[in-house]
Length: 345
Image (cartoon, rainbow, N blue to C red; front, side, top):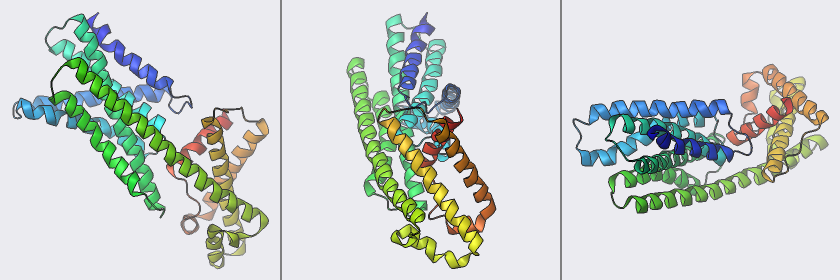
């Protein structure tokens, strides 16, 4: 019964967080895999602490161990972020919470098996508290890594980066271990401490959600406007009317006519797919998740297939020349993957 009381709160937390995924960004398989990664992280930390306990004073461990735990839990999240599997706030929070939930599951088992006997109320409260700390801190770290990857992609693409975006990423990376240290090292009334940590995490996640919303709207509004203008100029044969079009005209003499024609088709397909993906994302965000018409599904899949054929035919050197124009940032790639998955369903 003690095991049920310790593990049930964690399972409830994971279920609630997953239920927030109204866009179905995360499959059950990946969720369970991330929970398993969290449990593996707990095993790694258990081994580290077993080796460090004889040489590190208890007071120091209260400050060091929470930082180590957050660092180890961040490893699978960093892999996901680098592979562009976390590009929006909600999927980063779900991934982070799943890893933290797996960690707290195994940690609760460790305390029950290796620790002193506890009353049922204590076991239940500890299950709630440990799950909150690990899932909340990991969710914050995941959001920070998601922001960091966006910034790296913008820098690679030669786009301007706001100092506030950099500061936000650094702040979130520091906030997670600070909250964890506060919980572990500063011992006072458990209910008050639990309430303080819960309030701080909730406020931080709400603020991050709002900040992420601002970044997404910047991505949608500015990026979509430029792409629609470029698409219109290509269709009307007036490339010189946009900065991107001017660049395409400047490299025209570098290619034979037939290759340059393929380049323009390649760019046009890229823009059409990106605009379609962003438009679909905006509709889903607004709650207008209407089913796609069969004709629209087939058209999108045909455009993507033609895009991939042209990408292979043009070759690496040509693609490098048009790279400043044809680029999918993490958010663009995720939106396109969701659109293609919907068309293939």
